[in-house]
Length: 398
Ligand code: SF4
Image 1 (tube, rainbow, N blue to C red):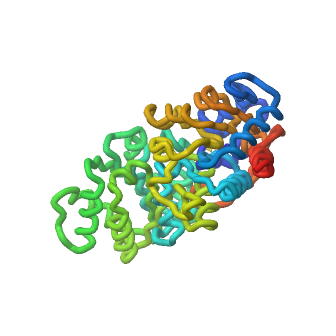
Image 2: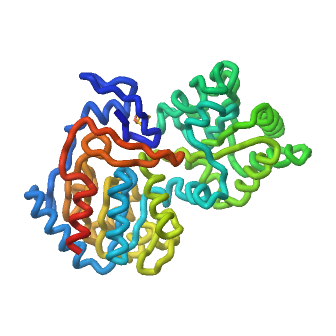
Image 3: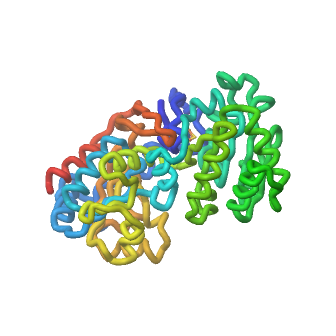
């Protein structure tokens, strides 16, 4: 079985009365599959599914400024339909990656940032950076399946001798606490200072800050021909929008050894959405089909804040829970349709709720792992309707 609890998309889950191999979050998804399920609703009243579908069709049909949002927990097939719907309605479309790691995915898709797969990392990587991400909590099996702990083709002695872990963060996170053997934890206040220090070492100069760490890191990276940065939100915000400095750093390191980058995104199919939209528009998120351009002003929170939309089709996400309250409350000013398997805070305020099957557990399809590897889901239950059929019906209605 494949777990769709996070972007690791673990493919070794066994469900045989119990749940084996999954982390605590993953096990919970399988064990409590029937709990907290959404019901078809209109304005908080439970109704027939067909009635809720009709109401959703009316909202989308009458909307003149529609936004389609979410989609990172559903399948590529459903994302395709949602993009088609947004295009048909000349709507805005966005996902969580616009305030998560979409910028890094875009740099990868534009081939400005060298990348690799997690399987290659397991087999080859020597220096593994976790930069601005606490994967111990967010991607619980990342270190044991792909990076630090496992034996791999060229790394038969695992972390005891064949890996070097570097954790960069603003505080000693739980991941940082694991940086003991063949490892360094570097506490940064400003990520750009560490990048600058490594660049200085590469230039043969003495950095003012992080001198010892920078010298050690460069020395360790040069011991092997395969090193990787797993970069998270801490790195994104630490760069303060200065991606050029980061790209220059990666380029310079690649003159003396090989350094790759993989985002530490959490949503199971964020990469799928980014890739699909990129193939169709050249942009990974925050896109307006009416304007045929992408930009910060088309980010879903910004559209809400600016009162630019009259309706939203939200798929598989809970913006009332995740967006700042002042922005989330603006959902009450517009018509909202939620497609989601689970009851959520957004379901409580949505005009229409359309419950769907859980992707991966109750319906199949494809997801793209965060490193670009295609994963075919293997559901162990069957439930209808799924996101693909719901969005397809809405598309037909408009
Ligand atoms: S690490 Fe992620 S994909 Fe793997 S079992 Fe845990 S939640 Fe599921």
